[in-house]
Length: 156
Picture: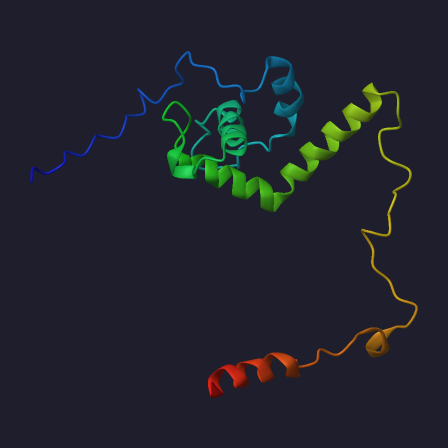
């Protein structure tokens, strides 16, 4: 059986974004909203060379398609770079800040206050009991019927 030749990984030069556009890509208007919310590069060390818009495009691509990190198309930054930014932003609260800004902008565009003033909780969301503690729970019982049937099958 002939050995399968490994395909060489694309170099950084060929990894640059092609003219292809994905449905999950940010528009210029969306990018203008999100760009100021991205944390600046860390002080010292090498300057940032990764295009943050492409990182966000890659993250939205993974979210929209459900593809595996390692299956990101090669015209996005390297999957490990995208994953590293995703993890860092999750840990430092960047995603929460983006969500808050987008929520406030949406509410204002609908003529509402930027932040909600009330919350609605229905009975399906919150379970309570008149009795509290152990009295409110029912102890699980062992079924004697099932074991009786099992025994009768074994005896026949």
